[in-house]
Length: 122
Image 1 (tube, rainbow, N blue to C red):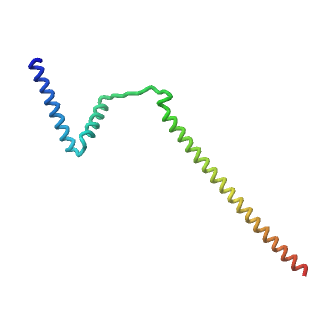
Image 2: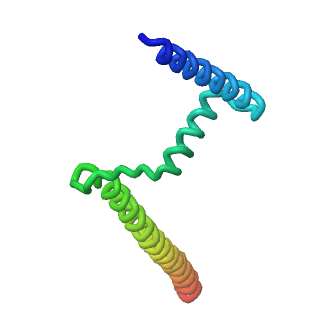
Image 3: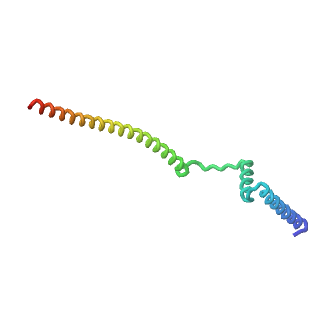
């Protein structure tokens, strides 16, 4: 190797090492871990460059969205059925109270009829 390449190589290594040390101490200045700061900086560089990757839609990668939509529709149907069930239960409960009142009224009229029939026999 020529002397110029060796010098350039050393210069690159020294510069990279210096930048790593500055980066390392700067992360402690910000009270973060160096790896968290590195991830943040890589994400910022990626967003600045504007890298975007998209896979064409197919039945396999839209399955999660389809499942979410189905789950939402099932939850809505469950709410509707719960409302209907509560209305039906209220109606049945009211009807049972009405039948209970008729039963009590029947016992009262039977008791009254027997009492009046005993009084007329004597």
